[in-house]
Length: 125
Image (cartoon, rainbow, N blue to C red; front, side, top):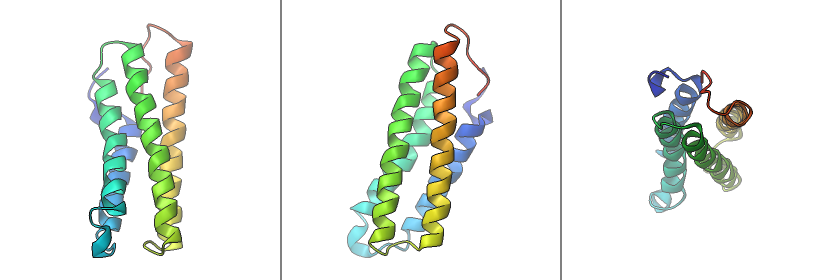
């Protein structure tokens, strides 16, 4: 398959994780170990599980890690909504980050679907 770094979904998830880190730098200090940390962990989980899944030997294992990544994307979307509603991030920033998360979720869903439909064959991600 090649390196996970060549995967478009990994590139997008990596960019989102970087954006989340930058965005949470301005959160109130009382959120340093709260919501800011949760957002960072969720974004790192997405990109890490995509990478780990790409390194697995079977479609079944890859799907497992993609499903974990998908769950982390949904967790991230929820936390971004909370951050916006609490006034920690501006609506425009939220819209951008949420849009990226939704795109990654769709890409992950597509990968999972392609693995389900083509057992034994790894698709180009």
